[in-house]
Image (cartoon, rainbow over all chains, first blue to last red; front, side, top):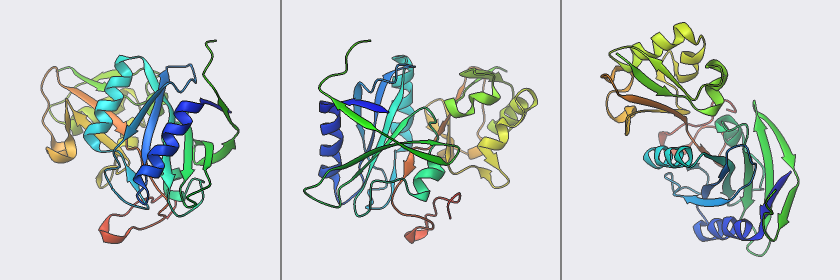
Length: 140
Length: 107
């Protein structure tokens, strides 16, 4: 299950809407091992495409260095689909390389309806999981 | 010559969980070969018969090696090599328009 706070959820959806019709992408980092998505990091889609996303190579290095320095990991890796359902495509599965991450898919195909789903992708196996939106992430 | 090689989470199964390992060699290709002697299989996850795998980015210090010489990139003592999987995907499946092909695993 993905537990996410309302503010981060809204920020992901807003980013997806803003970049529509291109795909939007980003990460929510959290303390290593915590499974707590705390730090919202929208990324530039270097492909600027309605059907493909890719973190810029230099941005990717900077992102991972920054997370490493903070002892964080990517708790969520998110992107949008702009004309199809919020479900991992074959391309998404072939690239998925963070077995510990929640892969969040947002579809912006309907302007008035939010489709926000979360998946684990491990060894090319996709498993959908429940998304629980909470007001704030409680300390545990 | 000691070259620190930083290993992404998904490849740490090859390094006993270590985030960084040390290799020796005057080029990236040589360092990867050297690492493979102690971490068998690691090299094959980074390169294939055609060169660097498309889903993997390799950096020497701050530079993506695709822009500075690929596997032939020269290394000197104290350089850091960072291996990171590309973060990419998208609704498009199979072969893209415009010459960029993606997603060999799914076709």
